Image (cartoon, rainbow, N blue to C red):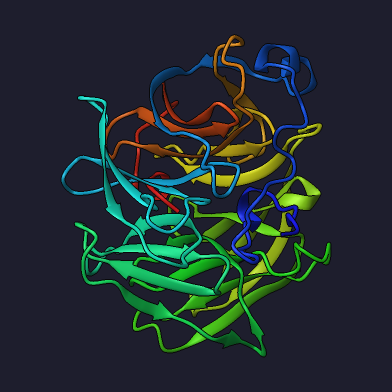
Length: 339
């Protein structure tokens, strides 16, 4: 069967074969790459545990969407897990143990976040254009949203919840064709109505509200930029501008998290590191894993423990899927817990 080249956010279930581009092409360790993306201080992350190995069926593993549940455990998705293997895992970060929460036959899940109104776990299925939800124990799967939005099916990547429970989705539509057809879509809290808030974006990936819920930070993967959408308070967008241009070299902008001080944690696909900025675009820090950690190529996402500053980022590559931890610059809030 033909192996279809894709990247972390654009994992497509094609004839049962999954692959990644941008991963495995660079054999330099993180220390070798530090000179190409360097500003602010260096924050060293430390290994917590390995969660997954490369799947024989798909030729890869890719961890994403870390989010803390009310039980204090960390929930993580494996984007490229095949049917029968854990697609959602629950991790006790203190005991360094994990167990399967959910698997199914078709889902390609790229993010996870708990709903603020119902406490259910919401997942984006990139390959099938759906948002599904589960009970925290993995039972009672439901389709929250499916179908076209303004005449086109989504490729939903990351999610962010508004204060009223509406769901904001980064739609990476157009990535496979190299077209700037990405969108930001708002889905009403009942899952019945979807509205396009912004379009013609360059492979929309990360999405997070700012601290005051006045606007959305979004990363555009194929332009290595972070844009800001100022909301109008009535369900629409008042303005949009490029806020930060990420000097990532071969690495590209993945998921975004925001801490209690408004700092942005920008995941990097193609480099096992995160770039940290303040809300004015100043580079504050680079989160690095030890240079000896060979076989790890992308730090896709991060969750900061609510009310604390202990951060856990998902890091993946040919060596497997790992959790690394570091001390964040400020406390964790909803905007730094999943998406």
